[in-house]
Amino acid sequence: MTWPNRITYTRMLLIPGFVIAALQVNDYPVFRYVAIAIFVTMALGDALDGYIARRFNLVTREGKFIDPLADKLIMVTACVMLALPIWGLPGERAPLRSEVATIIIARDLFICIWVLVAYISGEQIVFKATRLGRFTTFMQMLMISAALVGTLSMVVLDYVALPLSYGAAALTIASGLQYLYKHSKGAGGSLWRAERGEKDAS
Image (cartoon, rainbow, N blue to C red; front, top):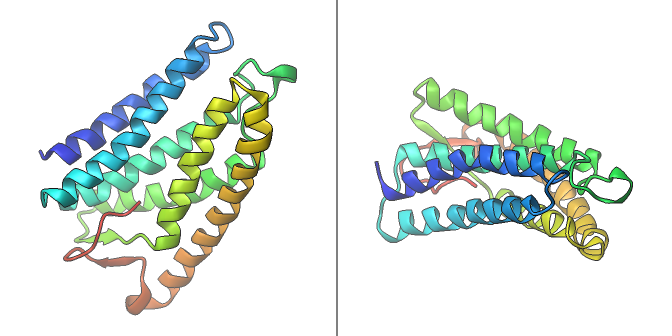
């Protein structure tokens, strides 16, 4: 197993830790910092495994499937937890609005299931990310980070995390429509491309 894949699997293994920390925040506020630290570690791991894979030519077919899968699992889990009123905010407010979480979860679950089924079925193809898709993933990560910091500061939550959440939701819808459009175009513009020469999906 290559080091980039080890990092990706480690990111997946940190997901339960993030959930446990988030569920403890109401009773033990210090766990906010634990949840933030775990999410930041997972986000930095995403950048690190991609850099190592490209820098040392360690891109593998396995990595092309598990890296986007890890991204989507992390994003879906974070959106679910942040849409729950478990963070000890005034009025039992959730850091992330439910409609924004629903949009992101629906799109990312679709991609996550698609990638997982293809990998299990032994398809010799990989999911090709678009520039819009990569930027959407970046904005989603930024939004989640801001929302987590927003559990410590209502100013950050209202004036940084909230605008970012609406921007991320709009990008999520746009990239989802783009993926559907490209898939409908057939072989020339399919979401799925031959494994040879394709970059990792985000």
